[in-house]
Image (cartoon, rainbow over all chains, first blue to last red; front, side, top):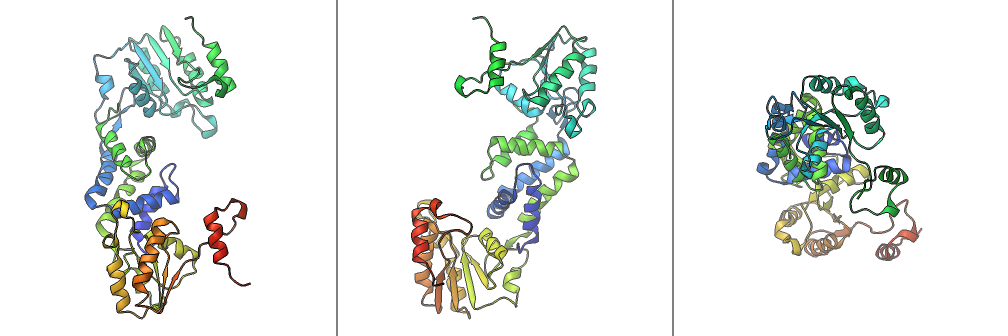
Length: 198
Length: 198
């Protein structure tokens, strides 16, 4: 079909990425074929640099070019409060909110026995070790409000409780800007359950 | 937001691609961060090879690593019939159908005055030169059945008619497997107009 082996090869490499089907891969490859070299090569370079130089922070498992990430190094952040998230993109979302000024711990996933992901596949051991020798007062468990995230939260809470004064879970309720009539039953139940005095 | 400059840079490079928004770019970058180096680097390499070694066929403007593409070089293909398409992915789609055994000419776009694309931006001059010194008997104009493609087809037909015996346009009608009730009016009109005796 493709008269260029290298073009076919690039399309194949693109289809290996999550959520990229043949049509999208083809569109991306043809786009890169069309644009000037100087505009296409930085993408290749960026992938190489990522794999050569970015690693996981030895403390919280965030992405960093150094031994520890800039959040862990930041002396202005509150060391008494630790937020546990599933993945780096969750940390990014929380940082965008600007609400949280403590430290993080990235689990690198959530418990999912069907997918073969148990506590050993996650950074649970590292989290417990970290809490054992720390001044952390409160751990906020911010895993996702879905089946895997909730199971992970319950599992972690049990392990963490003996180690810190307070273990909390992020609130589940109605998203801001939404309407009650379109909310699902479970979310509504949680919103009622989590009600606060005004 | 991102504690890794290189991670942020890769996300930015991904968002430059067509149809890739911030969320998708982030997902792709995190995926590449997670997988082993040996699985991620081939993508970077493939982009580099594409830009270093793939060029456009000097005859038909298909993608190739050589001076002319394998279709142009193929002596078993019919030199008397030439199919004009907008882009390489159109050629790929036609080749998949297995129906066409002639040669191609890729315009590298369609007329679109609003986007500043006139005949000079397309490979029209090259098409006419090619037809002037050739044994081509029939030119099939297979530009897209949309406003730009139809305008391009009309424009080309006028220029090509003095040069070859026959200029044809691919049929517009109901897609195979579709239903009449869901077809738009213009497609139905074209399907009636293009009816053939059984």
